[in-house]
Image (cartoon, rainbow, N blue to C red; front, side, top):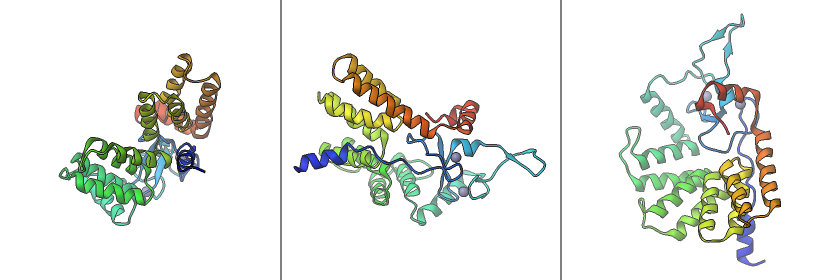
Length: 252
Ligand SMILES: [Zn+2]
Ligand SMILES: [Zn+2]
């Protein structure tokens, strides 16, 4: 097989689902930061439904819950405490914590001085530990010259790694890039995968391409099916309840 074909075979594969919520065991939504919360106590990502779910005492009365629904650690009461906990997760080699710290250095938030070189170093570390979003952040740095010289080729290389690892936003950006370049076939392929990972915008793009003759009806039907199947995996009454309570818990 030719190298380009091999590359495409890897690139256009539907990524495996993200981890499940450790409490209800349902698939976590792909889209960040929707529908899930990263816990700095135990490093678990918990779904919005389980995070919001009311807690009852022995008499069946609702109690004010101030503990992590997974490990029962008290939730931090101050920003300093949150930062301290994230630091501990970082020291434990938690990829998500390393990524979060990278974002703090990139944006100059949470008491960190903006430092693009340091941010990139952290993104590389988290990416090596399997954090797909970090590859996307490296791609972004190359695209816009943050801490490195602008290099479009490298940017695309990292966006592809991110998309292969399951970052739906990177996948969508690749689709947009192919669309701008007039490669409709490749754009549809990217949007198809993004639809199967819950990005409704990519479904709309395929519909638009279909009505303009750049995609087939079968393409659109398949994308719709993939999107519905995704919803079937992630929807639950408990998550709906949380979403009805607050926009913060919206998950698709
Ligand atoms: Zn859950
Ligand atoms: Zn916890």
